Image 1 (tube, rainbow, N blue to C red):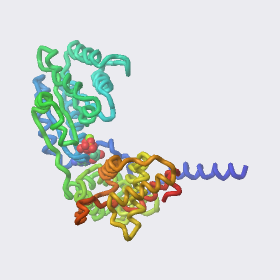
Image 2 (image 1 turned 180 degrees about the vertical axis):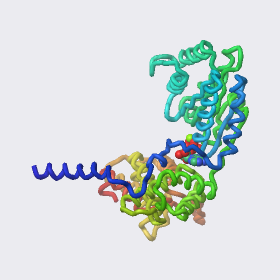
Image 3 (image 1 turned 60 degrees about the vertical axis):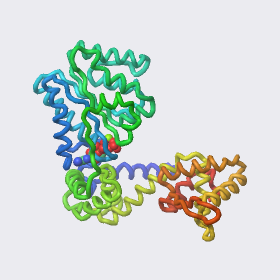
Image 4 (image 1 turned 135 degrees about the vertical axis):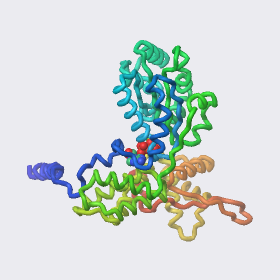
Length: 405
Ligand SMILES: Nc1ncnc2c1ncn2[C@@H]1O[C@H](COP(=O)(O)OP(=O)(O)OP(=O)(O)O)[C@@H](O)[C@H]1O
Ligand SMILES: [Mg+2]
């Protein structure tokens, strides 16, 4: 009974804490990923450009199809959504028959769901499953005809669906206007993969990218302005000194120029300050936040690795701890074979191990350098790209590896 009382109290305290007023946050939501601010600093030119591309729709004229490229967190989704919202608003003021829809193909995950989402957003209900995609397509076309609609479709993260299910959807969409007697549907494609163009069929590419716009990573000054505006909404006055924002902006610009990651860093730094019951965010909070974010990322990657890759990673850790070792792939494989033999697993071939090493490298956990070993020829030497204790902690969560670490 006592024990139950104890655990009930723990929860009561957790719940009560929710009602404690934060010293830090005025509006936590302002730092969420899906929050769209009223104002997007340093994207005025992009907003104007896209506005000019889509404006002819207001007169029911053809708008050119547009492709938007840019690295992650450069504001593509936020800007396109912003323009679409404004266009929808203007269209309803003018009583123009325009519908703007935005579909994220990574979130939808299949061609069918992309089409179903487009249907729903224009007011046509289709079942979640059960129809052939060609049938959904036909219903969309008929609905557009029947309701005399003009459509602007933004396909966000469109590379994901093409890589997953091929080009069929884009091909059909690029030809959809052939079903009407006048131009009815325009597109904005969005991708954070610049190389996406190279994998796309040239006919589809030229149909869908009559115009093209590239979003550049943000500079330190630009991130400073973006973060400052968000900080004003998110925090009480005097919580966040401009110097702290400058620090985050400079760090983020030198590494990636990604506004999402910069905002995340600000949020986690603020949460750190809040947890420590501080009333201001300090640069130490930012440094701690950086470590936490990195630790979480490493953890996330390592958690999902197959067991053989985890064992290979343990081999690397062991090899790196050996002062006399050269940290070559040969040594790492030998360490690996020793270990799998001990736990009774079937060892993988060197060829397979080499491809697992490549995967660990592309995941950003390890890095390699090609070195000349004299008469032994050239070989790769490995090191960790993230702190050793983060890797160690993440591996320790797998009980299968208990005896090995
Ligand atoms: N100019 C800006 N002003 C204010 N907030 C911005 C600006 N640019 C981006 N953001 C914010 O940064 C985050 C990331 O932006 P967004 O989602 O538009 O990036 P993206 O280019 O679409 O990235 P991805 O390629 O990963 O999809 C969002 O929370 C967005 O609100
Ligand atoms: Mg996006």
